[in-house]
Image (cartoon, rainbow, N blue to C red):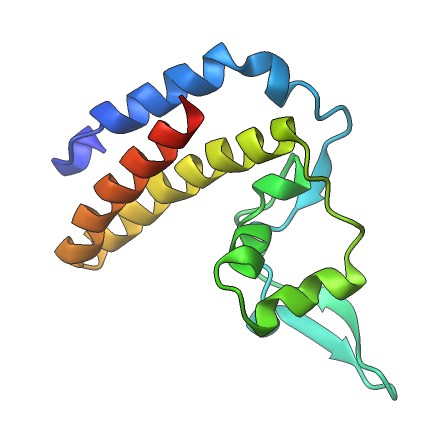
Length: 142
């Protein structure tokens, strides 16, 4: 952030909060392979009466972790609309206090990445909005 001339104090605070709650992050006992960018354009579908994903493209953001930390999960929950149908086929979501806390930490991570992307694209209003969103998520973690 600072190398781009952006203030990162809020994200350093988010990192401190995540570190303080490491025991909650450690509750995720079995990491899964996350694509980091799964959406329709990055999938290959096999022809069938009901199309099935037979391949995934663009794996440059792939990593191991909690499925709740994946960008795809964030975007599936981004709005209360048809996106939520994703969860009709996905295993039941856990909704414990620990899981909700982790989701907020993951959201802070995503907001940091969004800030950089918005800066790269010259979207200064989006950059400013990221500071508000980080503050709201940090307040909810306290």
